[in-house]
Image (cartoon, rainbow, N blue to C red; front, side, top):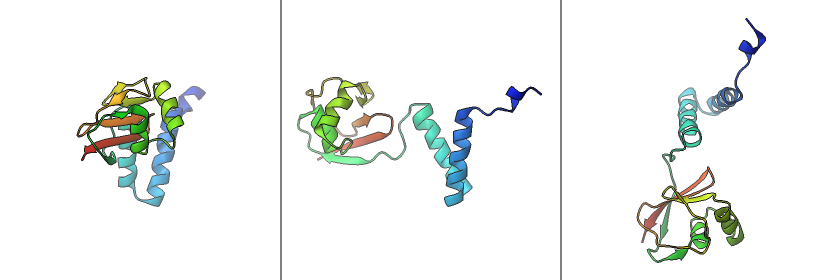
Length: 123
């Protein structure tokens, strides 16, 4: 057997490490669920199962202010930076203008980067 056959791919090593840590603090079943959720969201680019809901009025709002209202960014400046870097999507479509007017609708999904999500609940 060649020495390259003994190597573990870095992604596999990270998954194994993550499962081991979660299993130590919880159990094997929880570790398997966490690994499946990670695979779904980060590797396959799908939406997570537990997206926090944010109540908001159905009135037009600037894109940068919408991110603040959903608590997805700490400041208006950060909201504008994220939008300009194409790190923000609404219902799967990238937005590039921080001043764009967005009219919230029931169930609208706001995503900032790969890890921050909000699902709108219109008042």
